[in-house]
Structures are given as structure tokens and as C-alpha cells.
Image (cartoon, rainbow, N blue to C red; front, side, top):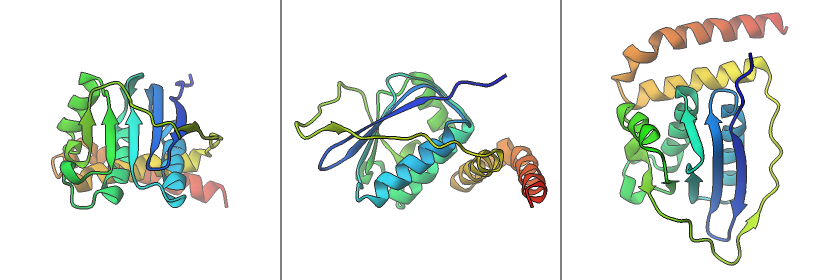
Length: 175
């Protein structure tokens, strides 16, 4: 059974990029989300608004990808100096971020988005990741969560061990 992935929409302005996440932000949408954020950053965007108003769920892989990008954009970990704003996260998502020890990487706001006149929808072609790319993204995301908060090691050590073995087997079979 395939779990439907989140729908990602992109709006770019002169000073920032806004990524809207609708639906279930899970491991299947994580490679696409990671690629999108990396590409926007490479295009010169260094301020991001992640609109979570329609995000109903975020799994640990997606949270790990988000945290990894938070570390890149906010290496000091101070939320008042952060270039990533999480807009309207549900209480459950906010609680997950807090419990995993990564909430401080982001500025959290609850309000209606104020879009400047120069805002325009940007084309976004979703990636079609291979199983190895999905597994690698899952592994890296969980390793990030363990690196950010030592309490996460107990939560994810077995998962990362399994993912590392799975990735090794996938890479071996593709040779």
C-alpha cells in the first residue's frame, strides 16, 4: 500500500521563498522536499517560510530533513536569528518538533501570510526518487535527529541500523 505524499507548492518573492506543505509530510515526500529546499537555496534564497497550515502529519524522516535544513540555515540554533519560519504548524507538529529537540532551529508564527506584490508561483517538478534515494534520505534524516538531540539516539538507533543495512543491500543489488 502506498502512502500518499504531501503536495508541495512554491511561492517566491524578492526576499524569501515560501513552501506550502499540504497533506501527509512523510518519507515519500522527503527527497522532493530536500531537493526543493536545496535548489531554492542555491538560487540565492536564504529566507524561507514553510507554510504548515494544511500539513496534517509529519513523520520522523520529514522532520529530520526539515531539521537538517534548519541546521544548514541556522548553525547557531538560535530561533530569534533563524531564516526559516514555520507558519501555522498544528499543535501536534509543534509538539513533535519540541519532543525531538529541534524546535529551536526555527521561528514559529501563527498568522495569516502577508504576501508582497512581487510574489509569484514558481514551477516545481517533483522528483521521482529511487528506493535507494528514499532510503538514503530516511537514514540521513534520522542521523540528523540523533546528532541534534542525544535523547533521540535511543529512539532511532535501531531504525538507522536497519536503514543502513537496507541501503547497503540496495546499492549492492544495483551494481
